[in-house]
Structures are given as structure tokens and as C-alpha cells.
Image (cartoon, rainbow, N blue to C red; front, side, top):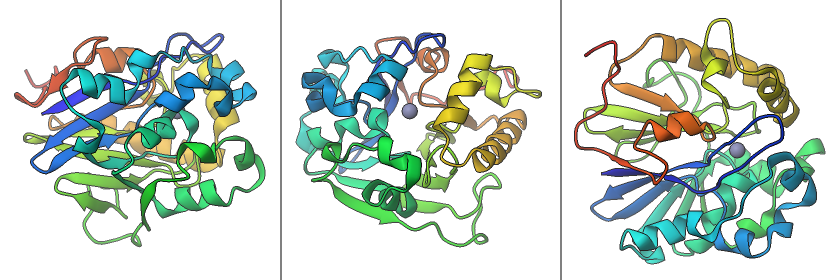
Length: 274
Ligand SMILES: [Zn+2]
């Protein structure tokens, strides 16, 4: 069973309503989260994420949206979370890490390096207090070649049916996280795109969304190249693969509504196949 949670609502000026899409994967030995949204410490003291981020994103900072609050409502405790996989270390993805002190925190080694030793504009984007105490497991992307996942190489298997797929550009070690769901795959693309219109040919996302993505990119040329690879993947319309990003509300709601739904009882099929 996989749950989809929104662990942070935003209202960026001129962009509209956004979510922070988090996956909760129930496994025999504990829960695995993909991303964490904001945590209780962020909600209690929003100033810790910085004035610029708050002005840009306008987060609502609702205690009931934190992953720990929603997991508690599902009957779990913090200790049930054994593993967290982060698409990257930005404040709206890593904020909840501190609420799960016993979890191993997996991410691309290049992203942890960026968080610990930021260069240039990276100095403004990471908030070390969010994850200073985390039990990190950095994964160095293997060289290209070997087993490819839907044509994507340098993939690391983190656990049974959980893959880290390098997709840098938004940040230095940004990754997609693929999770087995029944006979298919869910692919959490993080901030590799912000709007489904980013992946159409030609791209049709609103101009404001495109400008924001360019401003936030650590390497915009790399980001655009990876966005194009993702667009090709989605255009191929694999019936056993569902790709979504972190912040699009419509994609999130398609998984079961604003309260967060579950998948697992049969993989959702693309409309083209039915
Ligand atoms: Zn983000």
C-alpha cells in the first residue's frame, strides 16, 4: 500500500496553489517516505526557512499537513519510519526529516555535498538545521551503463523496488525516486518539472512557472535537458509507469483527493489502455 500525502500547501504569487507530494510506502519492516514537506519545527518557527523563500513560496505552514501529523492519524508513530528518500534537500522537501530521528535518509551523494558545502547561489537554498542530525545514507550515482530503468542509466537500487534516478539541474544532486506499485511503477520526479505543461511538446506551462523554475535552477541547461528526457518518457505512455512531480496539485489530486489517497489495490492504468 502506498499513501499520497500533501505535506505543505503553497500559494506562490502569480503561480497559484501548489502542494508538496509525499509518498508513504508500507513495507513489512517499516515505512519508507519519499520526501517530507515541512516538519513540525518549520511550522512552529517559519522564520527558519528564511524570508526570501517565504516571500517566493507563501507556504501556509499548517501543523496538520506535516507528515508526522498525517502518519499519526493513520495510526503510525515516528519510529515506524525506517527510511526516507529525498529527491533533494530544498526546504520544502527536507523539512520533515527532523520528525523521524530514527530513519535512514537516502539521497544522491552530490546533493548532500551541495547541502554541506554550498557554492554560489546554493548558499541561499538549504537550511542545515532541518537535517543537521539526520542519519544520511548518500548514494553516489554509478557510472552510465549497467541496468537501465526505462532507458535511464546510473540508477541506484535503494531497497526492494525503490530506485534513485539521477535527474540533476534543479539542484546539484536532484533525483527522481521510482517506487514499485504492484505490477507498475510510480515515479516521483521531485522538482524536475513543476507543471504538466512542462512535459508537453512544445512546453505549455504558464510563463510565470517557467520563469520561477529557471530562477531556482542550479544548472538550467542540465535541468532543461533532463526535463526533455522526462517529456520523452511520459510521451512514450508506458501503461505500467506513472510520473508525477512534487508540486502540481492536479497531479496530486488524481491519486485520490486532497486528503491524500492510497494506491496499491490495482495499479491505475493510463486512459489510453482502457
Ligand atoms: Zn520543491
